[in-house]
Image (cartoon, rainbow, N blue to C red):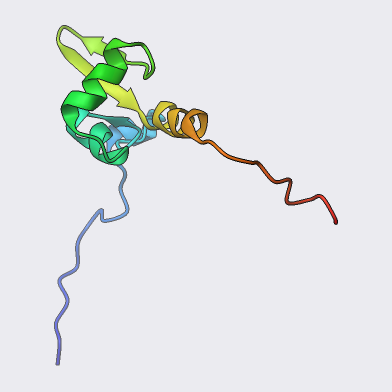
Length: 88
């Protein structure tokens, strides 16, 4: 018979989530570059060129917003766009 440990406050959210900030919304450079499947150096080049916005939290503390990274992906897409609602 398996025994399960009861964890109190398992559904309790951290304070920053209560404030409306999802812990996964802002990423460090390592995670942000991995999100885009780029090296940290290439990612830094894109930031330096102004193609990816930076969130400056404090002195030397930079983060990258997931929504900005997703927007960057959309801007980089090439090819024909097809309207899925258009009937042929």
